[in-house]
Image 1 (cartoon, helix red, strand yellow):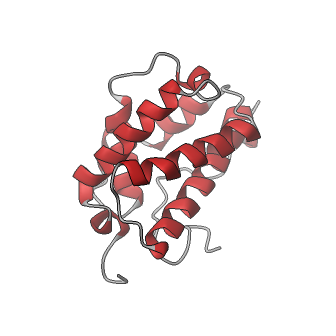
Image 2: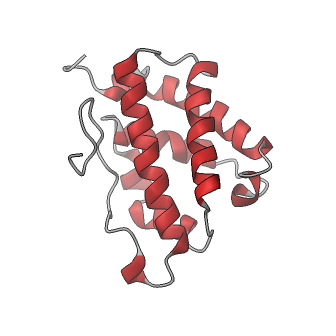
Length: 152
């Protein structure tokens, strides 16, 4: 697995699109998270797919098309709570099964680490009153089997 990227292991863009589509449907139906997403946007599944693909070692379409500043902007002022953050992680991990992504422990651990990290960044950015309070991350993080981009 060490030579294979998380992107490849997940089934590439097709597998990740299936995951994000499943996850997004769950979020829009969840009473705790739906208020953060409103009625939904047709482009959101594609944007989530691009972001996850890039994070997992696939094409850098998210950075080329939208850029990380877009991600900061969409989370600003949402006031994400810890309860919502935990529910986001729970629904994401459950969507892996429904979307039939690999269920091996190394992959699931890497995905959980990625979603935990990202949800903490999103929560911090959603509560930042000033730019100085934003998380310092300014580019799509590159996730590997062994560690998050902060080396933890």
